[in-house]
Length: 158
Figure (cartoon, rainbow, N blue to C red):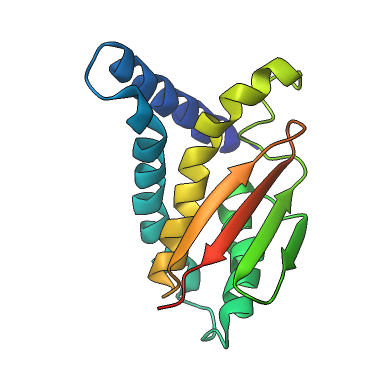
């Protein structure tokens, strides 16, 4: 529990820094989400190596997604994904019913508009980890009720 607070604080500070930089004219306002996602992607790529060093080789795409839902998610967010669904055509939906980076925000509908900036880094984390596992993907997130969140992963066939 003690290691959760620094990560959440750092995450919030990074978001504030990116958005304050945009307000002062250092970056375009529309690029904030991309900046956060790209930062997350680089971190996700770095996390893959220590997490998979003692793991058997993955048999298929579904094995990789199970790894993300269990091991990767537990390492980063201290819990497993609550639900994994797939259409078996390259689209996976990961549901976290109490996403810890949203749990600090109020559950009111008026705060839903702020959710994307708190999810962009996490989308990048997943995309980066998958990239280093040999899976090219597009990761998006949506929130309809806080703090529940759905991450949609679309696998791009090479």
